[in-house]
Length: 321
Image (tube, rainbow, N blue to C red; front, side, top):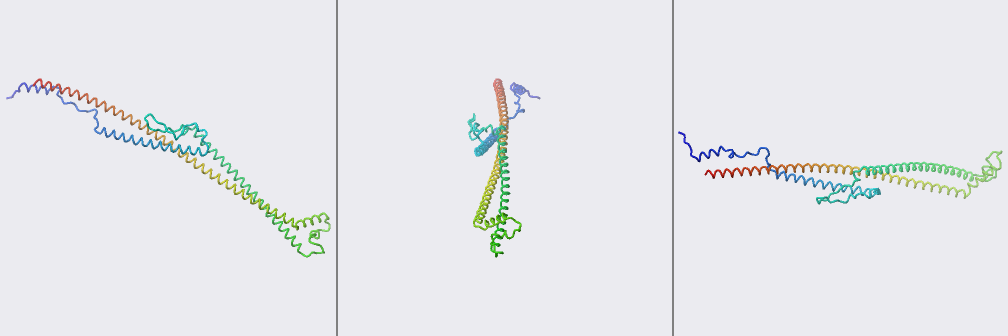
């Protein structure tokens, strides 16, 4: 025998069949992540690291610009860049942070190409000057060698002539004649008196003290000229070495500037890429925040709807009771 319940049991069955008593559906399409705050902290840490890297790159670029400016001032090649912005100055951004804007000539071919062309022209000019000095030095060496050989030859001839004259002067005279008519006795019979007189005059001049003084003076003059040529040669060699050192220094400076310029260009490009990446990350975060806000609003609406249903059901239950 089946026991039939009373009115209260019938009302309970009716409430159980009412669709308003169905359990609220769970979230299926979008679930709010529990570690939302952890993701936000991670993004904040990444943003701080990127900001520190940007600050370091700005400082490094500022150092490179200051070094380039010192090099330009040292070589008096900053006349065309006086009206441009100073790389040591900083500008204040809208957000209150200090930001350094690189000068426009730093990445402009209009200014950097003439600068490198001027360096190349100066190097070629120094190389041509070195070649000219080298040729002059070779000419001086050839001239000094020629003068030295001529001096040695003349010295040898004079020494030989003097030795012969002294030997004949000290030898016993033959035929009752002195040493002054040596060439006269040795000349042929058909020689004229003028030739004999001229040779005797030359012999007397060479044997005289005046001739020896003139010879000593000529030797001293040649020695002095040789010393002057040696000094000139040493000066030219010194100047040539200085020019070569200057060329090497300019080459090293040009290589260092090119290397620093390439590094600064790469750093600027990396900085731009980092800024673009940060902007993309920021946009993604904003989109996620908007999605989270929309989801929270939807959940709040569902919560209010469910709360209204629960309140209505409680009122119905109270009415039946």
